[in-house]
Amino acid sequence: MDKHSAIIQLNTSVVKIIGDTAYDVDGNEVSYDQTEVDNLIASKQYQEDRQYPSIGEQLDMQYWDLVNGTTTWKDTIAQVKADNPKPE
Image (cartoon, rainbow, N blue to C red):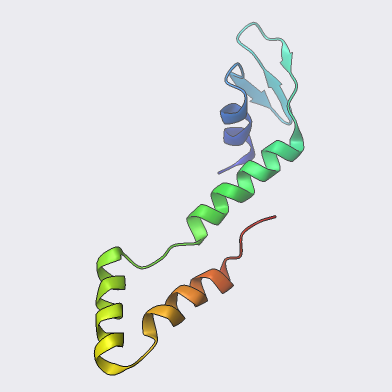
């Protein structure tokens, strides 16, 4: 998600953004909280980055882990979490 999309999502009265200034339909400047914008962008990026294997793939991993005494599923999930920690 880019900055402009985040600003618009956080404030539905915004219809135009020029640089860092947001405007409503009447051309009035609309204020926004930059911290909220940054947090929303980080949250969306986290959601995009932290992708787990499909449920079908995970169930298959779990089945074969039980059959073979391995930890493939646990290791895969742990790696996704380690590679993409939750934003603070």
